[in-house]
Amino acid sequence: MIKVLLADDHSIVRAGLRRIVEESGDMQVVAEADDGREAIQLVEKENPDVAVIDISMPGLDGLEVISQLQIRHPDLPILVLTMHEEGQYVVRAVQAGAMGYLTKQSAPEQLVTAIRKIHEGQRYITEEAAESLALRVAKGSDGKSPLDSLSMRELQVLRRLAMGQTNREIARAYHISIKTVDTYRARLLKKLGLRNNAELSRFAMQNQLIEP
Image (cartoon, rainbow, N blue to C red; front, top):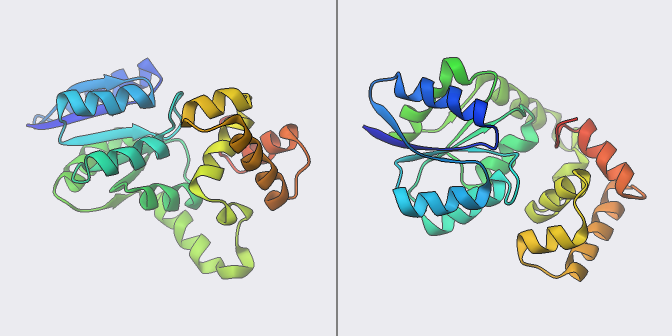
């Protein structure tokens, strides 16, 4: 049996994923987490064979969870589950160490196949996400997104600012100083040509970095 960990902050989504996984006949959900920190703790405790991680979670977001798990458990195959089909997210997830990328719309039909693939050491990216990624590559430098200039941490801080978190909350989440968060914010405004947090939020929604 393939031991699976599910990490998603929506209990209804987790229930649906659990049903799909356990109806496969060769998989078992050994743990469920509703935020990033709990996901890391449960990986330590339950030692799953595959981790299915949502990108948009409270606490630590999915990209940060993947990065930390890659340090602590480099052999653990990770499948990203997300509402986003954007090439930006595919690139970031793969850079962070994910072996697979699956949209929630595709999960009912492809989740079991994706888990089996990455458990066998192969990569799995949905056709929609692959097309989005290919379009980004085909555009070349002329079609480069402003997001491409952001580091992983800058992207994470951008998402949290856009969701209305304070500098103090962000500093606590990433164990950095409030002054460092201020520096990230100033850098984001300059790189993206924006003036304030309201414009950061609008930019994040327009680029599907957060849910409207």
